[in-house]
Image 1 (cartoon, rainbow, N blue to C red):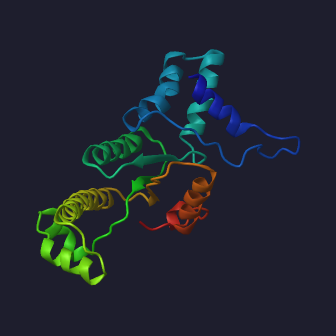
Image 2 (image 1 turned 45 degrees about the vertical axis):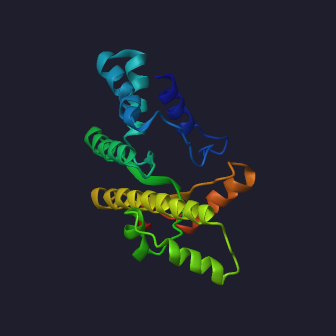
Length: 215
């Protein structure tokens, strides 16, 4: 109640010139599966308090949260459970009347194998002799155990890429929401990486109306 009330106050706050103080108010909401209950708690309070200042305050919060001023963005990882939870929450938000924004696909890892090789490698079909010959042609004469380790890492990478690709396809097919992708940052997050993420979002169209951004 306090958090959603503060959101409403920040959104409606005006400066001496009568203009909104903030261009945008960004709220880190609870985990995906609990976000609808978090946003809807004020509506429940407005229904309980039929009149008086509590009802007026709660009704004002409900009006802001259900208006075009609000957009509920969702964040998902490319795994079966997070994608399922995200898709269920999209339906719950629509049923509760909350405006939805975009789905942010977080920690997207690069694919090092060509598409044609992913399925075979994910099934464990990696030609170790071909890998060894390729390394030798590049001037790398590695011990057999090192080559075996590289082959095992290739299979592991392919399995992960194959699973993430399936999750991404499921997300794209089941939801018409705009989709934005953020890369995995293996070295952690610092100021420079925040600029990198901002640049990634800008390149995908953030700054224009989200309805103009394709998947």
